[in-house]
Length: 452
Image (cartoon, rainbow, N blue to C red; front, side, top):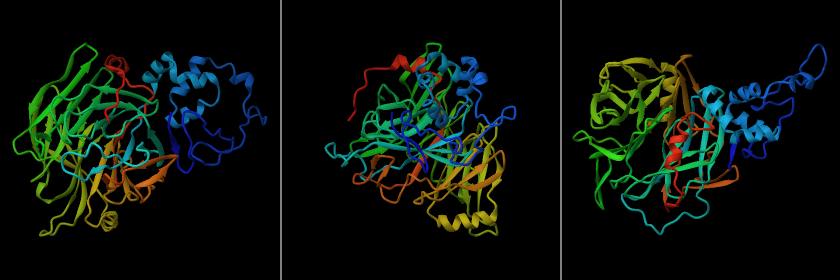
């Protein structure tokens, strides 16, 4: 198992966790050294706590966030073995609360347009590093994806799994990975050759759906947004493995990237002028939705927020007496109308605009949180909390430096040479010890083969 570390402390999980002293908790803050039980100075009375039923202890452990759970595994052999206990994992799936966290990666940007040189390889280790962000505590953790072979990039996340897709032009190989337990499941490759398509993933307790859209290779030197392939399996035994295709709307020009899933649909931005493309998973149809204030938007992004589709963008009306701002709109239930739900305070926007300086920004949402990250500046990001209606500057990720060849917790991350850039991109992520559709995925498990 590879690295999962918290700033400023680095450690490996699930092995070799530092055992906390009674005066330091996991977040590094000082706590009271002793608990008083019946007026005594005893830390824990073993006559009481040793008699707790195992089923009650397991239920308590199932509520722990992942960093605390893996630290607890250092306590005893029984706690260590919970990760491999079918009974505990079933209980965990039933009672563990959903956590609206985020996972970020360094952006890999291929420098050529179509085919890479198959003989070119990066020097040194090419281990993928992820950076897990807890918005409740504003904490960062490091995760290593050592099992992911070279030539794969993260594209989506759902149900505690990260979706990786092959970088090479052609039929796309897809891997689903749970970084907390080190599991990896290859899916059957897509049928159509593509370059860098948009990929959507949604996982429920009984089904899994993927959509791969656009960037069809119409020649070795040209791509065009033409078609969509879909992948579906569910608990009722229905399979559709890349056999269902649909045509994209005419003249669609969405950028290759992620899709956002909300209530049975995948959404992605369309450009020139701005609009929103919607893909209905059940009917296998695409439609186009007009974006609000589409001629005055800058850096629009679609995110999921509390089960709704939210559009985040800067508004700039240079010829009108309207102050520049950053606004959030929510798509209404009718599916065609937008309502403004939030606007960044003007004083904060002035500060944000000065730092952003016209470079643009990326957004990612999950549950009640939206993260807004300034392009080419991984140290500057804002967090908006829908429930508390507050804006916060996020502490910089301690694992990301200005150099693309830096050491993150003992592993090197080499995105130099063949790849440029270094800004962060990410997804909403619910860290889970087990996928809710583990049994379905097990049916697809094949002897793992390297796709290098």
